[in-house]
Amino acid sequence: MNGMPLDSLLNPDVYPEPTECVRLLQTHVSYIFITDNFVYKIKKPVDFGFLNFTTIDRRRFFCDEEVRLNRRLCPDIYLGVVEVRESAAGATFVGDGKVIDYAVMMKRLPAELMLDRMLAEDRVTEAHIREIARVIGAFHLNAEHGEKIDAYGSVANIRSISEDNFRQVGEINTFPLDKADLDSIRNWIDSFIAANGALFAARVSGGFIRDCDGDIHLENICMTSPVCIFDCIEFNERFRYIDTAADIAFFVMDLDFHGKGIFSHIFIDEYIRQTGDTGIIRLLDFYRVNRAVVRGKVEGLRLLDPHIPVTEKLAAAEKAARYLRLARGYVAREGRLPALIITCGLTGSGKSFVAAALAFELGMQVLSSDEVRKELADIPPGKHCIAGYDEEIYTPAFNEAVYQELRERCGNILQAGGSVIVDATFRRKMDRSFFGNLAGLRGIPFYILQMDCPEALARQRLDERGHDPSAVSDGRWEIYFRQRDEFEAPDGGEGRVIAIDTSRSLDDNIREIIGAMENADGTRIADKGAAAVSEP
Image (cartoon, rainbow, N blue to C red):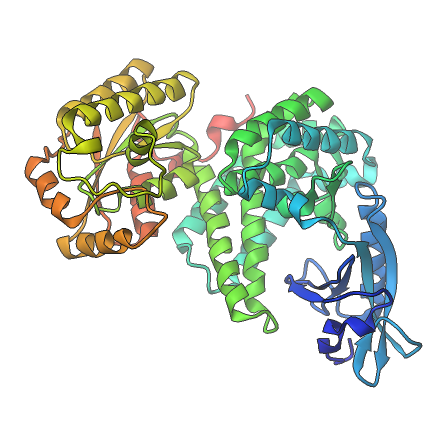
């Protein structure tokens, strides 16, 4: 913007329509000004290699492209391109001053219908997901394709994009994910590409490389009628001329990221019903890994922008790390699942914290004894029950009822082909044996995560939990010693025991657990690469 400050665009008077207030959001490539009824999106003069908005002519061209391309899925939302003009007070959208930049003008979509918000508020239904699948499926069936676009489906191009992504991730020095983990993800991707050349070629010849959206994730979907999927990739054909499987993998991955993996299966089912493309199944894992890396990179690039506030950068860093951990988890799942995992340890040992993080990465369900106990007692999850040891909802009989319910639910998940982590103290060998038998009946690995930490740390955690209104557990320091006296330590005869010191970092704990979960032949997935999914 030729150095013109943007502060003036926070003034309602510089807009052509009446507005009470203006709010600014920033991405790594855009300033987004939100008025009462409209949105104005100005591209930042940045060059990341994969996009270049450094000149006003480029920004004008890509504003036009953004409107043209997004009208495919949101024809009534993108109103056009407007001039940003110079004034004595700074930048403005009114008057006849010198044109200093351009902005995409859109109708403002209802915030309460944004898919990410609806999911967070548990307002999304199966019908919503199937509707989205039908919209995307119809879009893909009609999307442009041909010889020029087919060229982007080549193995060479897919490999080149992956290499660029990892190079750009490597240039962001603030990622907390270990370099060895990034190397493991990259090696898995490289192995899959090398082993599946015939599969990629078949997708090209089958006409599945199309002019797609390129950026379908939860924040870009609004459940209006009809559904609006907005903010596609306009700045680089290379990221939009892709396999339709890659396009939907972004959405499926983001559902997993937000802990809504159950909807992934519904979406895939409806998408295949709409398109008849069963071939996506063999590629979804590959593209989900890639999409998680891309999303992590995009969040990481926000850390390099000096104009983004520190609080937003901290949130971006956390999201970037979480996306890359999801990519690590996708890679780790192969050869390790299905499986049954139970936690084992005293109150305050960090069981639930580790179980939740592990479940996120491996896509496993968690059954919590604390939650089941409150449910059986008809007590709200956040309401603490300050009962004595072996009293009220903690009597031996009630404990047995809790474990029996956990066994039934666990059995149902395993019967359906799922994997599960059962989060409980499991201080008695007898309770552990019941779950070991469930795994044995299904012929799947059974792991016992034996959690431990110094007593001082356990006490600190229990003290903090007592002041946390959202905590479900009723564990207290006085209970710790009673559990310790009754604790029956697991041994190797019960299953594979993985001892975890939870005073170490969570990332170290997860890495250690995943590393210990070997295939039946003792070969880690990092050593096997992608052979299991290669072309016959």
